[in-house]
Image (cartoon, rainbow, N blue to C red):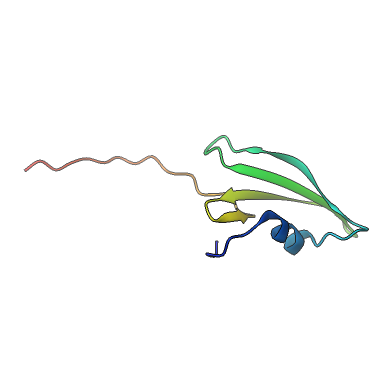
Length: 80
């Protein structure tokens, strides 16, 4: 994600382009099981039908891609 803070409203405007005639609605929200990060599902009606997009909270703002999960890692010390 870019370094600029991304707020949820600007991303909804960018991806769904809601208007007074076709407003966007939050339909689901919660936290991911893997890393407890927040997610929000927003839906809007379009000529082709209903469009739903999941947005995921990252350290630097919201994004349409889920955050990477931290992989297990091993560490150790070398004894001399």
